[in-house]
Amino acid sequence: MKNMQSYKITFWIVIGLLSVLISCSDEDFLEENRKDALTTENAFLTKSQFESLLGSMYRKVQNFYNAGDGDTDAWPLGLGTDAMFFPRDDSSIFNDWSKLNSFDGYSSRWYTWQYEIINYANTVIDAAQREGVEWSSDEERDEIIAEGRFFRAFAYRNLTNIFGGVPILDAPVIAPKVDFTRNSREECWQFAKDDLLFASNHLPITESRPGKVTRAAADHLLAEVSISLKDWEGAIAASTRVIDGSDGDYELMTGRFGSRANESGKNIYWDLFRMGNQNYDTGNKEAIWVAQMEYNVPGGTIQFGRPTIERMMWSAFWDFKKAGYNGQAQDSTGRGVAFVRPTTYTNYTVWKGAGSDLRNSEAAIKRKYFFADDVAPYSKGDLIPKSFLTTREDSLQFIYPNWSKFGTDKHLDGKPDGGYVRDYYVMRLPETYLLRAEAHLGNNRPDLAAVDINAIRSRAQAPLVDPADVDIDYILDERIRELFGEEFRMLTLGRLGKIYDRTKRFGYEPARNSIKEHNNLFPIPQTVIDRNVGAKMEQNPGY
Picture 1 (cartoon, rainbow, N blue to C red):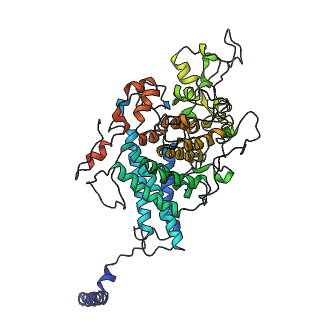
Picture 2 (cartoon, one colour):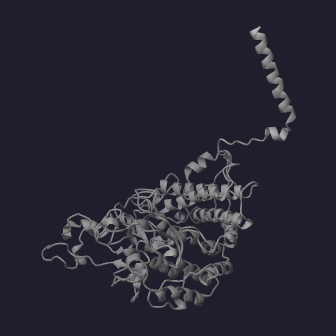
Picture 3 (cartoon, helix red, strand yellow):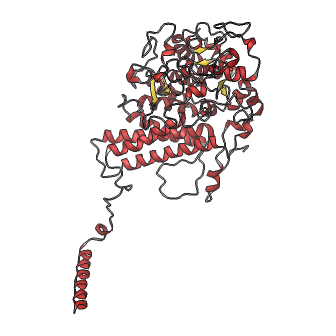
């Protein structure tokens, strides 16, 4: 009886469920609307959700400057080229260019980072255009899309300048795909240009908070990509919008400013790199895009709780026991480890005829070092002469010019190891001037190129350049003088096809001897080629 009763109850439950199912339309029943988990359909319904994913892209940009120790972060800045080298081991990669291959970790990591940004950006762009998103206006939606398209263009520029053509992805990759093919270099630059044109029209003029990209950042990058496409007029127009005020109130800083402006013996160029002086909202009107770094704050840096640029770029003179130093780093000395040394070309050659150039002053580049104790026949406080530097380590690790933009004599809490925490210029107005100068040169107007270069040189109190002396080498030299350690030098030389040429002529001797013409392009990572089993992924020649 009990079993029969249970059977009847079960029967009527089943019938009831069937009747409910029959009463539902096929579309209503099959439509999944999960409330208990995030999906691609419900993860992006509000502006704040989009901003969280955009934050992941800004986080990736921090990677470019703070991914590891040693020379890890230096190669995009020009390690092994005309600009700088690793002074501790002549057999290291970028001193020995034969070690740049499809298995090296430097190029493969860069390649991976950029495609991570691209996939994030594609997700933002795609999701922002779906129905059901709570936008306050079309303008708010387009601003989010513009930010995504800016980062996608930025990543393609970072790839194309050194790898050549790569696969163009214009939508999120949500399923395994193994049949990618490479687009041409020009197609990639054009794809980036189209994104930047949209970003230029829809990004805000004023950043909502420090570090956010703006219309000026889009036009700055648009100018560079347009130069790569030999669209000289387009590059001139884009850079002019930044320079003439159309994109906001930007100008070269000419007067002392910021946290240490009252200190004597310093200058405006020194001020640009003091802690707390980088962001536009602090009064720095030449800051276009600044990567944010904070000390021991979650999300403030990627590694070690602080940036490592002082450690990487400064000499270890505090440990030069031969000159009386006791090996104890001080607040006033910093704690450089000499992982990266400027080349002779960077430290000396480009400064010939510099006159009173503020960028070559002792405040900007420390060239004078003094004995820390009596070392016969010298006394404490005497200038260390060049003749005292007799070993390789003396001049490659302990005593060489320290550029003040990479460190400080007043660290946070007085800590010489890790107490230099400043934000990083990704884009600064002098580079916009140099991009426009490059476009004018391409447009056969060296006279106008000289005007733009001289705007920078005038601020630096340097002798002005004559139009007859302006060529691409002069512009690249001016980039060293103004932007050393800021610009992605490897990408600049890569887009111009001059990694080989400039390294062969002006690089560190082991790099000069090992670099080959095929190094103008970096190798496609072997893992990318091997996993792409559905189509042939071509490798760059020479690898």
